Image (cartoon, rainbow, N blue to C red; front, side, top):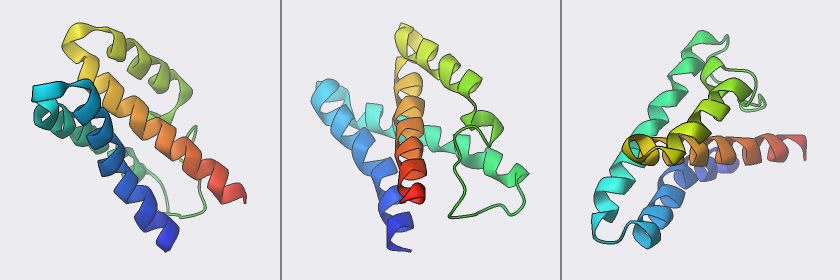
Length: 104
């Protein structure tokens, strides 16, 4: 349970750190946009069970697929979608780290 709470907290903390140090005066706006990308987890509603603490999201859920991650990387390079892309990539990296922790 502690791992799950820590994982969820990181989805708010890491975008905050990135926003604070990379987006200067606009850090609050940047943080809100990056945190809003957590909506990507709606694809968990397609799974049965919806939540499985021992399931790796990467490669399992449609919006956590490798093709989707490639799209998120492309979004991170476009000025108009940069914050969304960065937020989604942060989310995928954190979920990927969680996948490694499941194996331990």
